[in-house]
Image (tube, rainbow, N blue to C red; front, side):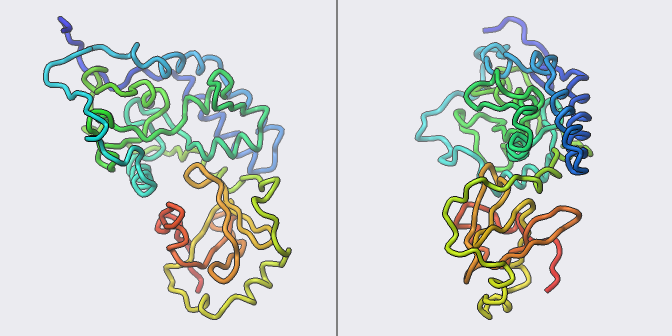
Length: 318
Ligand SMILES: [Zn+2]
């Protein structure tokens, strides 16, 4: 029992100004990349790999027990048996999409900007030397991308009966999520972030890079023939032309190679689809972002655990 309970805090660790400085560097790097100034982009990504940021996040995110203020408070929730926990351990994609739409690219605890892991993977593939990332070794991870790593945090820990539904999930940074680990808000002495509304922020998590994914060096399957997409479009069955308006999708950063459509990472994974009777695709640009427009049955996405609603084409010309 703790004799003196400290007043609740908003976050585990107060953000430092350098975090916001690296966001400016990363934005400038992304802009330079989009302008074709690759050397400038590379230099800016290198500059953003700041030791100061590294020292801010480490080791607090890896040693969550050090963040505990109160070990056992009367009336706090307790760990429950695994059989009684929400069988959905991780929030499903539609919950993640709703939470991101609600919270934006900003930690609900400490307020720092965040970047989706998909974007980090794309940036790492583009600039592997400037953006080091070894999943198994945090000491070999780019400090800014580590610090700004977007997480979906269970406010009430899953192990304490917290659900993976939208009401219990908030966007957080790596330190706030990993630093909380399985501990409750009361154990950590944290205010409930859901009691203050999400605040809008101009930062969009470098999403402009999503369209810049490098084509895979090796397709998962050798295409049977290297037919031109126009040929496929012309050969498509008539039912495609009759598809409903809502069945047009846009995948930013995707490209066509042979009879396959390859995507930038969606929810952490690069995907590929076979073009043919069930799907036709053509390269398009939407709001300056290149990608492909798809006509297909929404079930094609659902079968892969993706939400077709999140992939609808913003422009329907048919
Ligand atoms: Zn945070």
